[in-house]
Figure 1 (spheres, helix red, strand yellow):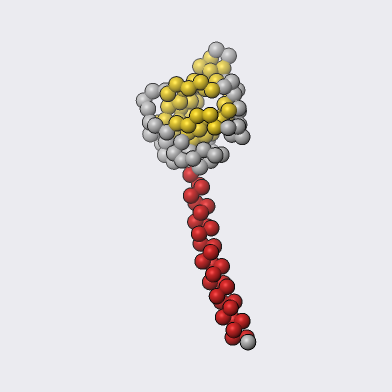
Figure 2 (figure 1 turned 30 degrees about the vertical axis):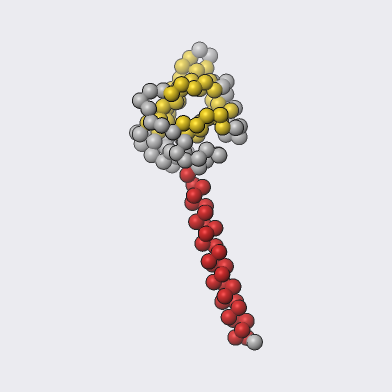
Length: 127
């Protein structure tokens, strides 16, 4: 009886460890997204936080600002691993330029009360 119990316990431990491997691996697939914005996109959200709906997504490198018009109030997230993103926005008649670092940085997102008027994805690895 004791031998049978040991075999069942061993079989249960092997099964449990085999099931745990896919669950651990599944977490890494989500690592390239942030706040609902999937890799390799730069997402614009309605409102000044990422709790609003995504209203625009960009993923192409350009040497110019891609025109967009969202606001007043917007949030932006950069999920790209190596690339920086330049944001052109206006507030009170003043045009401002901001740079978001790549996804590995804590500076890869921002919120503003202004209106976003353009976005440019750059292959530069730092701002």
